[in-house]
Image (cartoon, rainbow, N blue to C red):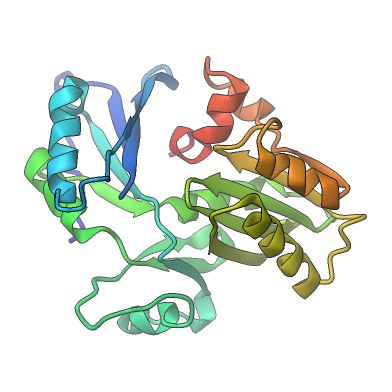
Amino acid sequence: MFATMSINTTITDKKYRKLSLQVSLAGLSFCIFDTLNHVILSVKEVHFDTFHKAIKIEELFADAFNDNPELKDSYDEILVIHNNNLSTFVPEPLFDEHFLGSYLQYNTKVFETDFFAFDEIHTYQMNAVYIPYVNINNFFIDQFGSFDYKHANSILATKLLDASKNNDDKKMIVNFNPGHFEVIVVQNQKLHLFNSFEYQTPEDFLYYLLFTAEQLSMNPENFKLELMGAIAEEDDFYKLAFKYIRNVSLFDVADLKKKNSFSTPENLKHFILFQS
């Protein structure tokens, strides 16, 4: 269910605060924005103990809300960002909102009972089609009453395409998450590829990188690979990629860092959240 935030009518009601939450089955991260001064006031992560499979995800979120009272504060805007690999991008000329499930059936298993949503990305004439976590959205409706939501990949793709402006080199960027990662190939605001892969080992990670490069005729001796998300140069994943791909580096978050007081690793990890 999509919910739209109601707008306060008087300036005295405004809190000048925005809450963004990035949610997955493994936990959530959230940050609070001061919208008057355009700064991030705080960021926090909550990791779920999913060892006990019988626990409902709604109960885990309820515990997170009880443990973090700032989530129950009053905000002018609330944005929920769904982070999963159940999404795809569809060019505007090929898009029909009455057939959302058909776009996803090529890269994920869909069911008749699934609820589908889409984010319009007008700047790049495409739409992100995805399956949101309906039970999590329902929990937030009980908590907030109304809010907006979108998919993490909508924000990620838009920001990476923006950053590729006037760069004619085809570049591969990987957004690293626990259990899955996104591979994005951009060239001067053109999206050549966006795909998500599940992994368990560094070798899995390397295989998908080299496979993607081969499919797009990108030579590991030449193309640039930039890594972002929950990854650092000391990680085995980074070291193995560096062994087989010549030009490997962490994604440059210098411009993003100018807008907040957080470290480079935090800006890499919360790249999507900080720009929501």
